[in-house]
Image 1 (cartoon, rainbow, N blue to C red):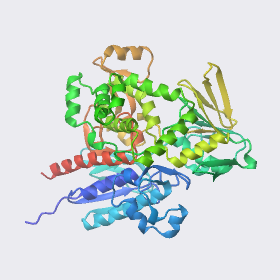
Image 2 (image 1 turned 90 degrees about the horizontal axis):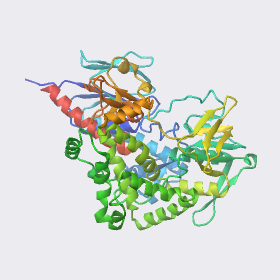
Image 3 (image 1 turned 60 degrees about the horizontal axis):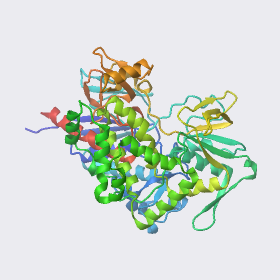
Image 4 (image 1 turned 135 degrees about the vertical axis):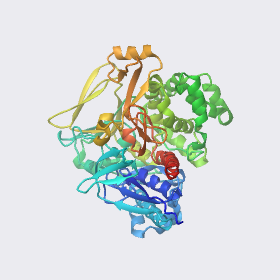
Length: 579
């Protein structure tokens, strides 16, 4: 008897980096009978938002290098030898002198990702995997049909299609609130071409992260020029028409992010992650929750006795709060740009000697390690994570590229870039006449309201709420649910509720829960309903909508790790379906 395997129709919604890694996993999976359809809103695959014109101009660069990027099909060093000469010249890249440790222009990297998609499609064809690409396709809704074990995907201007499994990889999303209504107010610096504005007055910038640096690089080029002087240093000269131009960053801690250095492990200790057994054992010992203190000890402090014994002696008796206070106080007591200049020298030495700044590298490992099991934290520990640890992590592991550092220092030396500490309680008011006004209390306790004719929100990708989830067919049917974390202490939960914390709710059994951003997912990135039922047909890797259970995500590292978990579950599910 001849056996014909049942076809398995899989939809990948989004053709950016997440979709690319998911497609790679599927082509490698050995799952028989795959029919894959990829839906992409833009006219091309691979680049997503960060590496396309939606997120970059020629001046924008990656903060990772070839040796730090998970392998897709070929390395950049291999691929660059096949790139047309004119495109290489546009970005001043010489294949003969390519350095796998150097960062790359983001638009150039986007072309690399597109090429990887093409190569994977060729491999899929040799493996008898059907691939259909839908470009310029906007997904308007998704509906689950458990009675037929299928998922309906609605595409703008087309008939609905049905699949056995849908993987949501829709990528970045910045909802617009004031942009387009208030002149001179930008809810996001993307696409950056909108910021190529000749200006003759100060620009207000909220944030000091890599997102802010993207805005700064574009604004600087629209209002002046850089010239190299000595030893790679730059000088910035303002255009005559922009004599009043200035950029003012506003940061909660008044700090600039840390600078790229040499990584001892270019893939940030992925082999050192907590094992499922470690997690299960700690949960059993901790009243049903994963302890943040346990993760801090296991995936941070315990990394130092062998590699950095002196640093370990300094921190061995510190808890999470003490450690963060120590590191932040050191940074907060230094003038931001002087610290930035000193850290630039330290990072240059690290790269030249190929020696890591180990505590910073281990902090990145901690960030990666605690991301995936964060759904098992108590509400109390999630609050500690967000309020205590994440502010330090967001500064230290930004890994600002050296060329961006040189530009920021040149702009500061020219008097056109400054940073102001605005504290926790600052706010911004859009002004109907244009721009926005920043309200904060300065270091002397004086209330300040500073108006800017042009104001740009640069806080980075926000964690979007359950209400922001775009596929209403899943929310109205109850297929997805609000992400929640239970308070370990009912007394603490009641106290938060009594204090009018709108994110705290109580169930019928008297337990208190904290609403965290986005929807509920499990370890395999499957959506979960309010009753705790896992949906075997729908996975989500769209980071804006799972931020409550994945509080930190690291670009391509996230894509690689999440896609591995998804494919593992898919292989199991489809094997069981054939039994």
